Image (cartoon, rainbow, N blue to C red; front, top):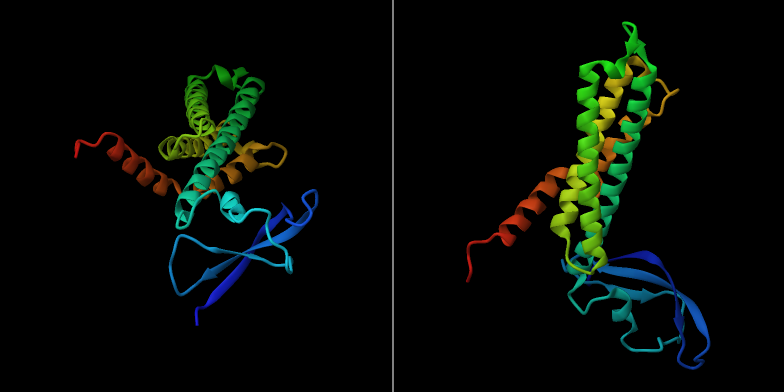
Length: 225
């Protein structure tokens, strides 16, 4: 007998067959066969009794793919997740930069604002440049996703670069703030703690590099057969 595990994936309002204007809320559960690896699963309607969907193909419409298309659906979801994480990384990087450049104009050492020191200017220039590059990568991936095109390569690039930029910018902001960067009086210490999670979320950045490399090898393949 197969070993099954069932988990809830939410609820859905579905039209009924006997009353065209009526609808009912049903619990949607996924039953997974733990003994048989597969990329598809079974929907279990938990509270419908003798209820039948208005259309026999409603389950497939809800899932979006025919049988054995589960892996494709998961990968499509990962594209959206990685664009989302990339955008969050961009936000952390930009927030770190804005706090740093503001503080650098207010903090004074040796009779002048620290933003006038070349070492601080180099940090600010690098931060701003990487943030702008991250923004363009995120927008490019999101626009391709909006067009309904596959964008695993672009999403991977955006996620990799934007989250690494978030990590670097939060660290540079800490350096510009000095000891104040650790104080909860300033938000930089929070950005420094938030950034590492983005590097892991949506697939680690080591994984993103593999996804990018495979996409590039496929895109620029010299094997025309």
